[in-house]
Image (cartoon, rainbow, N blue to C red; front, side, top):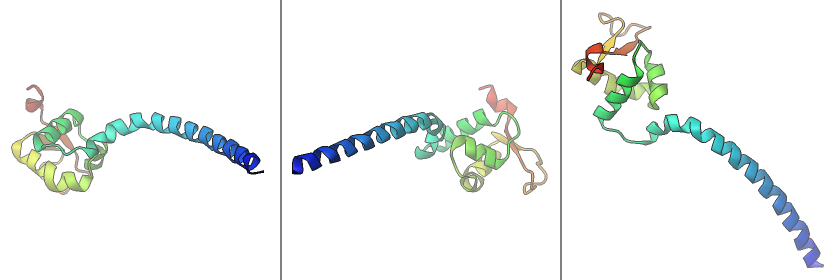
Length: 115
């Protein structure tokens, strides 16, 4: 009697393993999207992060755009990274005379890109 019940439950388990196979294929598809944000899982030196931002900010971009592209929070960039890059001249503001302009954007300085 119990072997028949075991056979039924094993068939049920086999049915759920097929569902798991389908979801694992879906997860594999999203791994490409996660590659771009995998930077957010790494702790990078300032210089490495600076190089990434310089490569990304070839044209004026808002802080949110930069943060999204490099996988960091805009708050982190505004508090720690952007001010340092502005001081060392690797980044420039769209509105240099108005630091808190509501539409402020940033771009890599041309002279540093040719290194």
